Structures are given as structure tokens and as C-alpha cells.
Image (cartoon, rainbow, N blue to C red; front, top):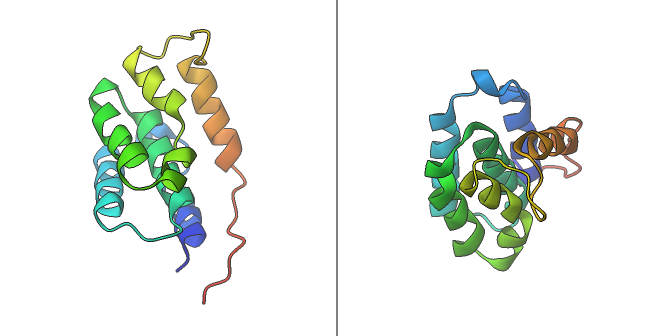
Amino acid sequence: MTNEQRAEQIIKKYGFQFNYIPKQEIIDLLQKEIANYQPGSSEYIRLLCGYLYCLGDISDVPLLEKAKYSINMDVGCMIDGEWIDSLNNGGVETQFTGSRQEIIDGFVLYYHNFRSEEEEI
């Protein structure tokens, strides 16, 4: 399964009803992905980090930072620093960070119609 297909599968499994998504499952998937990084999985890791942002709080910042800063530059660029800043400031809109709801809405809009363009090899 390609990494884009894995991302699409996660979206189909969890959707965007964040009250019903088990946060610990997202944490476990993200930790597993960080520990066993697969080249080209930036989109998949970004999706998991986005889910964690939407479900999370300040206690999740270290894991998001680990994903953003410890794998490689490609992955780091994919993970929105705004997510980390927003969790750190309690979701308050600032000059450089949208409100928590605006960020969540943007995440959902981006992934709502996500489809893998890769074919499995």
C-alpha cells in the first residue's frame, strides 16, 4: 500500500467527527510511524499530526514537535507549525496563528476530498 493510500484509508476509517476518534489510536499510529519512518510518508505523517492537533491539547505538543523536527526536512515542512503554536497558546487567534476552529476547518477542508493519486507498485 502506498503512503497516499494509507492516508486515504485513515480518512475513510476515522472521518472528521473528532468526538468519536480514539486519540490514543492516533498517537500510537504516529509514534509507530516516527519510529519506523518510510521514505515518502510525509503526507501520511502530516495527516496523523493533523488528527492529533484536532483531538489534542498542550500535552501533545512534544509528539508533534518530534514528528516535525526529528525525521527530516520534507516531513518537517509538511507539518504545520501553526498546530504546535495553537496548542501551546490554548487555541487563541494571534497575529500569526488562526483560531483553533479556523485551523481545524482548514484541515478538514484540505482532507475532505483527499484521494490517493498513486498506484500501488
